[in-house]
Figure 1: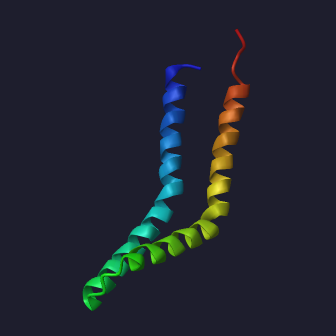
Figure 2 (figure 1 turned 30 degrees about the horizontal axis):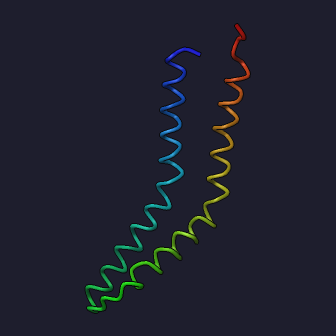
Figure 3 (figure 1 turned 90 degrees about the vertical axis):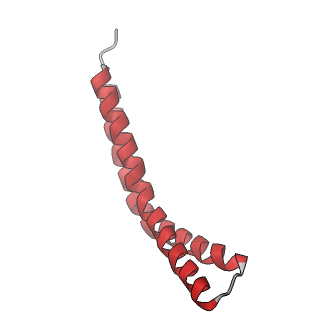
Amino acid sequence: MDQAIILDYSREAIWLTLKIGTPVMLIGLFVGVLVGLFQALTQIQEMTLTFVPKIIAIFGSLFILLPFMGTTLAEFTRSLADQIIGLPIN
């Protein structure tokens, strides 16, 4: 395996990490902004109000997006395994 292939798969692994993690993080960010806006408008400064909606939203998004994440990760793993199988033995 030469360096170009290793760099290509490293770049693809980083892209895959972003592709899998970004939707969940964006949902958490969006819910956090909404809760922060709600707290600023109503002047409710309850600590649990910050965490509970974000946790529920993130777990819900993971439940919904898990098939997409699993399929994407399985495809990458399959292509990586196919590449490893095709290596010549010295």
